[in-house]
Length: 265
Image (cartoon, rainbow, N blue to C red):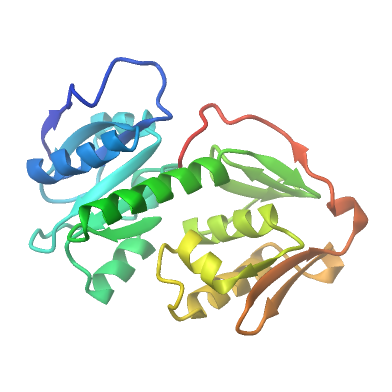
């Protein structure tokens, strides 16, 4: 990834050691960067912008440092620009990644989400609607992923966005982690498909739920969510899912650490 220039919008950014309200904006287009920064500013967030030229296959130290100092990253994508995107969740580890694009082709949306983006919103949407979507994504993640906790032998590390079981790291995709976090945070409650679709995948509630079923199936296998291990992940046809603890000792929850920053990602 080549850096053409780094621009700080002074009217949006003031010196501070706190970064929980700072959002890192990656864009080649100054107009897009200013537009997104204005939306973030009106939502109570500060911003820093850096532009890139041809690819995100390598993140320079400057970009990585800016990203690590921010609560989330917004990537502005234009369909006429030929980006060679690497795995975003590896390039920007531990970050909440929100993609804004003027392209709504299914292949592009799927590719960006599968590469590690957590949300995909269309830049051409009505301004107030786009601002509301950004606010919701930042607000949800701030509340939902800022607390680390332990349930039974399953340890959720919100800072690293990582799950360990009996000391062993479980290999999960970003969406699998979010689904697991959401289900365990709402255990013993029916979570509707529409709720999961909008909260985890940022897609319309009416979308096909096969992606939910696939991710849930993988969680069962990876986290051993079966009665022998104290859990039952029950699928309610055409309704949603319910994670049921079947061992009394799993009903408790312990706070094990406070994340270094109440981060959005």
